[in-house]
Image (cartoon, rainbow over all chains, first blue to last red; front, side, top):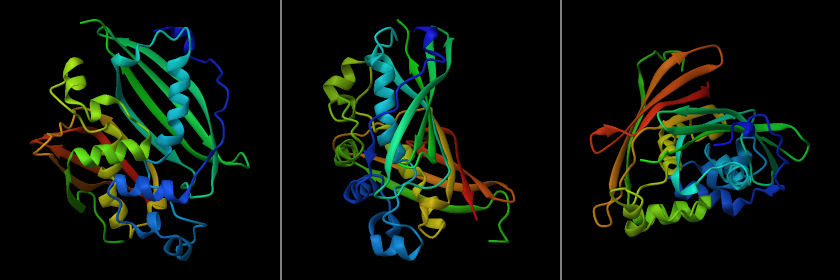
Length: 146
Length: 134
C-alpha cells in the first residue's frame, strides 16, 4: 500500500440527502424497534425534526469516501483482499431525515503488520450549514499474499 | 438512573439471522459484496461460507442499548467495535447472535456500555463500546 496516502487531501463527497424511507429501511435491516427510527410523529414528540437514523447509519454516507480511497489510482489496495478491521462513530448530534450530509476523507494512519497492511481513515460528516454531525473512523485490513 | 453501577447488565437480546436478513441489510446499506449472499464466491476467497456483514452485526448489537435508552438513539454519543470473528449464516439454519450490554464506566455525561456479542459460543466483536448520555 502507498504510504503517501496519509495526509492526502480528498474532495468532499456529493451531498447525500437523508430520506425518511431510507432511514426506515435501514432501521428494519438492523432490527431496530425504536419508534423514533420509524415514526415521524414519535420522533417529533421527542424533539427531533423527523425520523432519527440508527447509530450505524453514517456508514451509508461514509461508504462514498471509502470508495474514493479504494479508487485512488496509486493506492495499491486490492479490494478483494480488504477486510473491515474496526469501526467507530463519534457524534455531535444524531442524523435525522432531511439532513443533507457531506463527507470528507482523511487517511490518518497506514501500518504494516505481519504481511498485512492496515489503513485507518476518518470521514468527517457535516450538514448543509457545515456543522459537524458525526465522524466515522474505519480501519481496513488488506491481507498480504499467503 | 442514579442507582446505575459498573457491572450492571442493562440489556440482553438474541437475534436470529437468516439469508433474508443479509439481503435486506445489503439493500438498506448498499453493501452488495457477493460474500454476503453467495456461498460459491465466499468459498472461492477462502471463507467457509456466506458471512453476515460486519456492519450488520455492529448495527444490531447496539439496538438493545437503544431500547434501554427508551428508544432514543440520539443518546448514543460514540460507538465503536473491532471485528474479530465472522458470523457464518447457514442457508437453512441461519445464525443466532446474542448481545449482553453491561455498564463499563460511569461519568458526568453518562455511561460507557460494554457489549459482549457472541455467536456459536465465541465473541465476534472486540472492544464493543457505546458511550451514552443519561
